[in-house]
Length: 161
Image 1 (cartoon, rainbow, N blue to C red):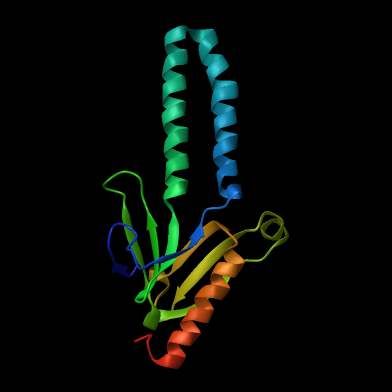
Image 2 (cartoon, rainbow, N blue to C red):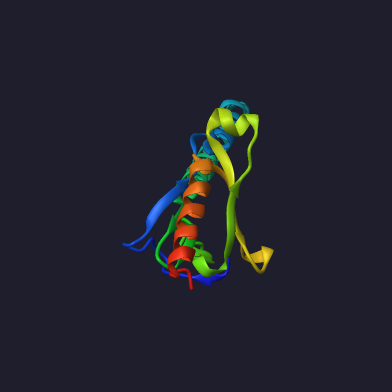
């Protein structure tokens, strides 16, 4: 990510992308395996092992859900930003300034169309290492179109610099 911004979503920002329900499907499958398979196996070993598996599984699944919920793609008058993180040393935002955006795009496919969950890419016009790539974004097709529309308007009015 190119530039660091405020650690929290600033007041003037507009959230345009969050993780869709499909992004949580992997966590649900993991929870099913941990609680439906690993926990009964741990119970057959002993009560203490079952408690350890239960607590560990609950913490891990809870952390994964909170991590997915923390992902926010937003824009303000300076650029498009990605905020994420749960633990204090993980929280942060980074992104691409309007003047440096090449374009926003999304990956199309049958599964994406059915679930309305797209991979969104906001390309940096100078370097690939500073671009934003997010998977399983709810209505990511509309998000990419909105970013491109705002970017074109800013270029027309000279506010993208």
